[in-house]
Length: 295
Image 1 (cartoon, rainbow, N blue to C red):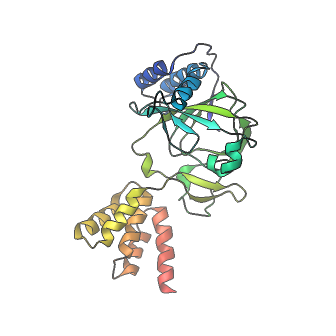
Image 2 (image 1 turned 120 degrees about the horizontal axis):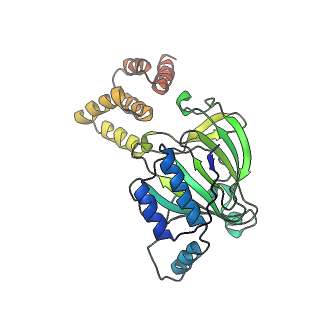
Image 3 (image 1 turned 90 degrees about the horizontal axis):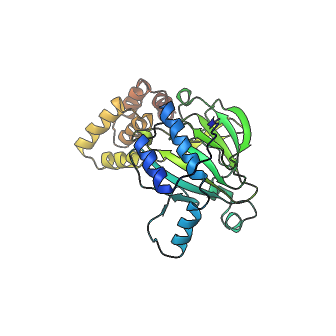
């Protein structure tokens, strides 16, 4: 489950103080010391029980139009611009009896949608009893990412993100299925942004079957590549061939083969190449495509 921090931190800070301190740290989850210090600053901000209400009231009154943006779903509020590799956000978690939940449904707030993350982030319970989660772990490097693939999920526990609880969600390791809190709750996050994260998939899971259901992190680059190859450009085809041989993302390598299969005169040879690509994902799909051609 996410790494839990035991922080005896009673001091509080303002939002600008937290932003500047966290930007100076340049939060990186691979650095244990910097992560601990970032968790302390997040806890200090969480101890400030007035800053978020002030921001929301100013926004509702039209005094700070455009100064806070929503993203990552209807309940998320971005609290800072990207500074280095991090930004701050708040998340509002409605309970089942709240009007927003009744009007929009559970999945709007990602309740009951088991998933991992392709990024790491710190979180702390800011208000209320907190959403509950069934926590699991798995080994990202051991899966291809195909629908219905066995994920090797290991159940850890069910617990709530109560006020003051501070944790690090680890990219590609921690899986959780969130449940609504008993009453309206708010969490604060320090988000880590890695330029390479778009090349790594975020998965949804079927907890009953212990399998991957789908990819939750669509990548527009795949669509761009397919459109370019479909145009018939020789340069696009040469680029796609390079992607298929050398790209760091298995998903992009597969997209290269899929794109070229739409214009290739010899699909059997193309997918035979895919079978020997050295990528488990590509070779698995390539084998299926060749068998379909032979059927």
